[in-house]
Image (cartoon, rainbow, N blue to C red; front, side, top):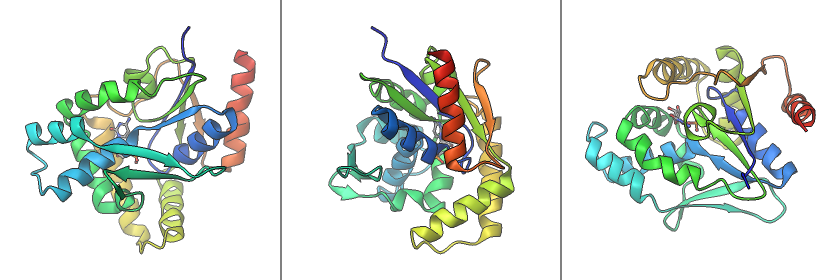
Length: 224
Ligand code: C5P
C-alpha cells in the first residue's frame, strides 16, 4: 500500500510553493514544504546566535526543531510555528532565505531532516515541494515535476509576494539574491538542484498559477 507522492522541485520563485499548496488542497492530500524546514533551521540558528559554520550545532538544531504546520479551516493559508511562536513571516525574510541556503548545503543538516520529511508521506497522498524531493527524499514518487522560470520572472514574483506581506523589498537585491542562491543550490555537492531524470519539466515563465495546475492535472490524468 504505497502512499502516492507527487514531487514538485525547482528554484525559488518558480511558483512551485503556490502550485504545491493549491494542488494539495484540491486533491485533499498532505503537503510537505521542505524549504520551510531549512528556513526554520536557519531561523532557529539565528535566534540561538549559532555560528552558521558550526555543523554539530546546526544539525542538532535541525533534528530538534519543534515545528508545527497549522491550517486555518477552509483556507489554503498555513501558519508555521516554531514552538509556540508563529514564524510564518519571519522565515520569508531575505536574511533567513540566504541563511537557509547556507545551512542546506551541510550534509549533516540534510541528514537530520531526511526522516522528518519522509514521515509526511501519509494517506491519502502527499505533495512534496522542494529541491531534491524527486531525486533524494522520494526517489520512488508516483509522479515528479520540475518547475522553473527565468530569474527575472522569479524576482518579479518574489517582489510581489513580499510586498503583499508588507515586507519592504528591492528588485535588484532580490534578483541578485536569487541568482546567488540558484548558484549555491545547483553547484553544491550534496542534493544539488537538478531535475530528476524522470521528472516532467514545466517552464512557468509565460504561465499563470492556474495554467500550471491545469498542466499538472493533465499529466496526472494521463497517468491514471
Ligand atoms: O523553497 P525555499 O525557497 O523555501 O527553500 C529555502 C532554501 O532551502 C533553498 O534556497 C534551498 O537552499 C533549501 N532547500 C533545499 N532542499 C529542499 C528545499 C529547500 O536545499 N528540498
